[in-house]
Image (cartoon, rainbow, N blue to C red; front, side):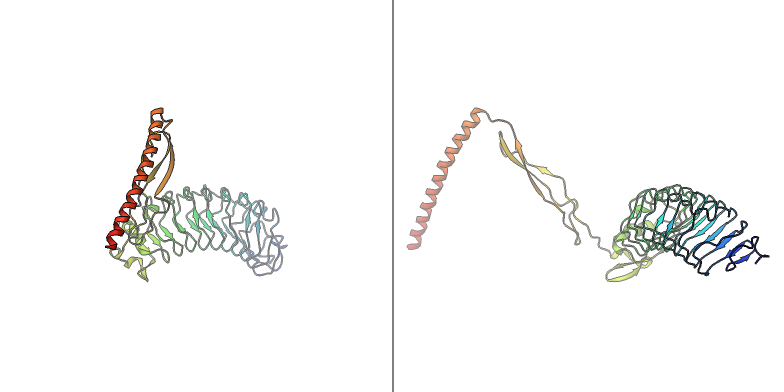
Length: 379
């Protein structure tokens, strides 16, 4: 121990080998005291550590790798990693982390790999990663993240791999990936994504690999990929109804770099490999849309009246079991064409009298015709 470690005061439960200190599986509840300042790798995985005091690592300015996985840490505080200016790899997977302070990673200017998999993270603050500009790999799989906001990954222009698999993501803001100009690998598989807005991936000019397997898509438009030209592998398994992806199949045919277009889709009561699906068998369901309103004239030439406007569900017509338009096809509104002149009012009164006379005449004729019918029947 004393020969291997620069400082013999470290707990005897740890093993020191040159600049590497291993304290894993020792039932520790705290980071051991006396870790040599020359240490480059510190492994304290698989213990019972729940909290890390401020400035615990402040003297370990040479530390490059820190393994804290499989512990019981629930909160990452702002001063938790003070002094770790040389740290390149930080592993925090398999803890119970649900809260990460905004400045938790502020001193980690050399960090290239951050692993936060298998925790309880539900929200990522917009400035959480703003200080780690050198980050290359970010692992956030198996958490409880539901929304990716526009500023979630702001400033991470060196990020090459982003792993968001197996969360609860249902919403991705349109500009969520706008700064990720170096990103090559994007994992969004096994989430709850049903739609992706057009140009969501527009900023990913270096992207070569993306997996969307195991989401809730019912259709996938090629517009989400239209600004990306370097994709070589695209995975879409267990998602879509095949015939709702005809545009995507056409887009795929025009991609010269796309070597792997892998996945399966459901149609005709069968699960089919995307590469084997024949779109010529598809009948595309079209939902109806309303046409333009047409408006009638006011029901009167002066005074108050009513007017109608109508529309038809024909833009387009529903077809192949598509849905009919939602809403009313007719609307009634009041109209007023100003006060009527004296002559018009007199005319109206005259018309009312004439209408009464006409009604009496129609009634008399009705009785007369009925009598004729009865007489004819009797005969």
